[in-house]
Length: 227
Image (cartoon, rainbow, N blue to C red; front, side):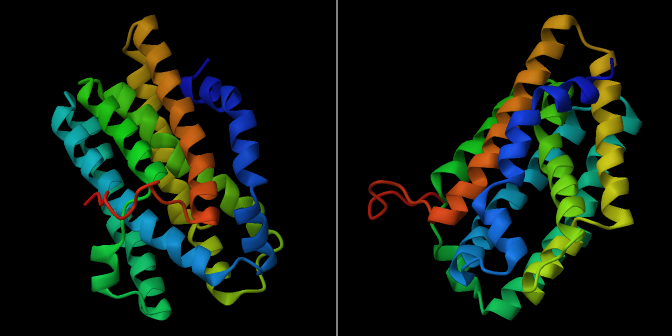
């Protein structure tokens, strides 16, 4: 069985929780509070910045040139699509550079990116690819689900459309191909570590929605500011 087929089946319950989360439901209905979406964008900006850095570091670890280029393609896709779209949203919502710089990193955003860095520091490109994949793939499934009815809120509709495009699907397919290729060359124990990393990322994706919805903070946010 292909690794991504096995991993997707194992993560089914977690992915369904993401799809049914109130953040997603209210975004689709057009009733999601603007301040919640704003908070989500600020935390996602930090997440995507780290996501791109991990791709670059993974490319440096890659032993095969084609694998290196697939990791780098993920960076290019982020720069050209997701990050560019968010910059447009920031402008529309009046999010300033000063606000971005002063926004504390939420616990879940910190823990999620720390998990992916941990997989990177294992020295395994296979484990790193598996940890990165849920972000790509789950968003594609959410986009395909939401596009059927869309959102009455123009800004939220634009967000949905970001993840339901041919270019985005091609990017997801590319990352799945990379992950499956790397899984074929590892021992059973490392493949199990890949699956664990994939599931932890899937869990953190679910928690990311909740983090945004409640506008999560550190218990002592006055003293803790992570840059």
